[in-house]
Amino acid sequence: MTPRLYRALFWVGIVAAAIVVVALLQGVLVPFAAAFAIAYLLRPAVDRLEFWGLRRGLASLVVLLVFLLGLALVLVLIVPLVQGQIVHLLARFPDLVSAAQALFGNFVRLLRSHLPAAEADKVYNVVSNRIGDAVSWFAGLFQSMITSSLAILSILSLVVVTPIVSFFLLRDWHRVIAAIDSFLPRDSAPTIRGQMRIIDQTLAGFVHGQALVCLILGVYYTIGLSLSGLDSALALGLLIGVLAIIPVLGVSIGFALSVALAALQFGTWTGVLVVVGIFLFGQTVEANILTPKLVGDRVHLHPVWVIFALLAGARLLGLAGVFVSVPAAAVLGVIARFALERYRASALYDPHRSAFRCLRGPER
Image (cartoon, rainbow, N blue to C red):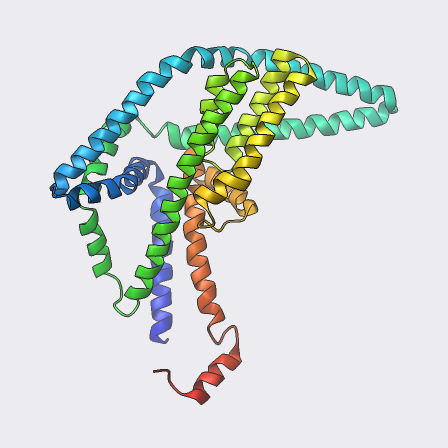
């Protein structure tokens, strides 16, 4: 085998081993993954303080404490504010289920009045089976999220392990990067560094831009739903703002929940159409202005691939997989585009390219 083939097999083995380790230790890795995400977000602030003359360790401690105190302050202020609305929202779910059952009963009676009994029963059975399958699928997905993620994120991991690991990652960030760089193959190091810079720019653009999109959407839907007169508007707005970090799926859940609650509360088409109009305007602005301006084209993912990434992440890693699926897909997209560029520049794609190089001689 040629040295190039040996190198390819080596990297394939490294990737396969990493996948096996993540699959076997995904529960243990959750607090460390959270710590890495926090360190990645706070690293620019630590670098800035270090540039101003503060020691790296002290800068890391200051930035991390400010972040944790800010997070605690937000929780202390928001949780009591929305607690009553969340309780009220949960109390409405039995009525929502009853209304859905009544609506389905009306649909069945309408079918039987316009179709023969045999055909109406056939349609009823098909719709019932599909609804049952959908409910079972969502229940299984929710159960897998709970058992694979939330149950593992214990209080000890959240309160102790994650902040400690975040501090050490912040303090030793450049040392870790230098150590990883020292193990790169020397002839491929410039290429790998270039691709890692692209990945860093992609992740930074997505995280910072999506955070602003979530904030704007949360404020907009809180104000809009409050003006429409919908109960629990503050809780719904905050929920939509948090879930908006999951593209497509987050706002879809908020839309379905808001429309259902509007139908239950108002009982007229006018109130429901007002809520639908709020979401149509919000999604139009988000899709055509907010996401292109704040997130931009750095992620380079088609909406179909975003939906696939969300479902695949939920299936593999539960709730944690849902949150990391789009950034992970963006990283894989950078790697895939680089591989395709190399493929299109090789003799595997165009044999005449290799012959042309042989006639022209080695490049200088």
